[in-house]
Length: 117
Length: 115
Image 1 (cartoon, rainbow over the protein chains, first blue to last red):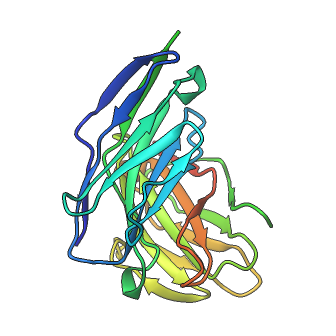
Image 2 (cartoon, rainbow over the protein chains, first blue to last red):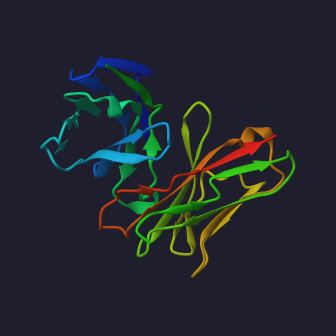
């Protein structure tokens, strides 16, 4: 079974600064995907960024980028030029690429990020 | 449709009453997933479907929870004899078939409050 751990229950950052959210995972699989989801107070789950395990290049989406270290099973999210709208709960998630666990997300505990003006 | 539609948004039930939640996945998506998010924000996987067939039900408390995905109907999650501990937000998500990407698209959730 897979596990995902987010060791930072809460983080805060000043507007326009950079913040990094940590995530580690444990799996014996070789083919999988990792995600960061954002959950604002509206509770809608919004996909922030996605990383395929077979790709060495770190994924980037505008101000969001990841540091994917497959051997260390680490998947951190960096938010650059933080904006007030980034305030939300962030979840790291793992999903198998196939088999009977296909599509089943395993989530971390979440990190509450607050961006201060 | 282009988004996962969950109804109702809010549901209040007295302890012991039945609760039924609905989910319409994105058209063309083969997989449907149900998750329970409790007050501590932890997500718990309940069940998944591949079209109308149960794909993985390892997270389902089988005594009181049941789920269906029938052709041409929204999927449903039913809780018989609700308990206080069932109070949570229930999310439905859908994904395309295997080999076409594994991104899950989430609905807005149904908040169930058992009083």
